[in-house]
Length: 549
Image 1 (tube, rainbow, N blue to C red):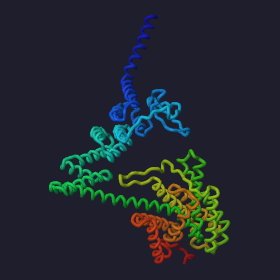
Image 2 (cartoon, helix red, strand yellow):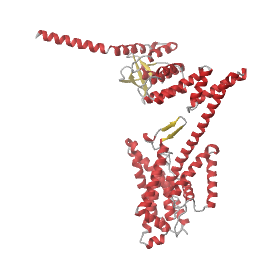
Image 3 (cartoon, rainbow, N blue to C red):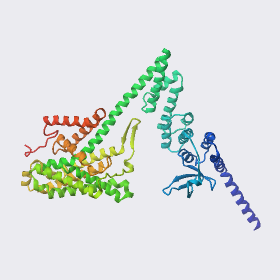
Image 4 (tube, one colour):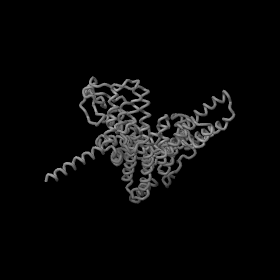
């Protein structure tokens, strides 16, 4: 029994020794890190740079966070515990503390219990370079790519050396290509004449602004040298630089054109959503609805109310707001048609004045309920950011989704009008109201549903507008005139005409704005539209039917 107990005892000692030896490297690394950071509170500012380099060379996992907090001025020494901490001021004017070594939270203290680890601009710049170099070896491909982009914009010796060492080990092709661009830019700056020409030939097709800046800088330097001594052996380098810069400017102009086209289509999509409901009501009923903009406003405020009611569901708020805005604006539209418009049929001037009065009432109602101040609607995470095609051209997600959403609404409405009995009745009433009545179609019921449908679509447009601008009582007034222009330009009652007119007006506007400004661009578009209507009074796609004739 004594032998068995002895064997067990020695076995436990051996296992403990093995575990201790296995953890020895990590312990040594942490000990080295602890020794170095313990010197931070007592190190003078003039001696800080070498110490920061030594800390950055450690493999401890706390290194990146420590350097980041040191750069941002949030690294302190807690006098009572003789410990380094991260400190952030709270609303009680005390500081919340987090331990550097074990990330545990400590009790808040006043500023008098802390000593700040000082830095200056030189050390902060040094830390930025060190953090970028640490990120070059990060496990995340996104972090590595961002680090290489940062190095391309702000090259430094340490970063260039790291890229030279890591480029062969890099597995991601796009990161490896960008690393090669960094090395080529360095070769362009410090290489021989032959190396510079070789670098230019490989950089010629690149689109990064930093590459163009490097080429322009090299050309300016070469021009200054030629003014002094005019060396003829550098003419080949001058020609290569000029040709490469010209190619990059040509590519830049092309992608700028695509950028204007994308913003024009996004503006056209907004106009399409705003005008498509007006096309239906104007085409079927002949009603000039001046309250159409307020239907969009109600849709935008519906989105705001949903986000306030469900603050934890921001990611799904727009999906909830689309049907809610359609129902709210549609019901308000039906009430307007049943309560006011049906009593004014055949009297367009009175209808226009009545709907204008309703628009003022709705604006004042919103001011009373929500106040006159604009309201901010949050964008879900999936609508934030942009899709980067290349360094010069990117598609913002909010505008891209609005283009797709507008097309989806358009084709859904087109299917309703072409494939359903409601759509058949709407087309019948719009083409010949008297004949539709003779065929037992309830034109008054069709008018109410049509007006509600057009108002509901306007409410959906308000949901989209809430992602592009602030929500306020005057939101609809900015789009009502443009909506009527789209309807008249495309042809009253024509959905395809509305689509083409909205995209055309939006694109023309965005192409004219950079050179002429937004006001003059709107004036030119309006004058061109007036001249077009003089030639084609019925628009691009005129309505057909006996009643039209």
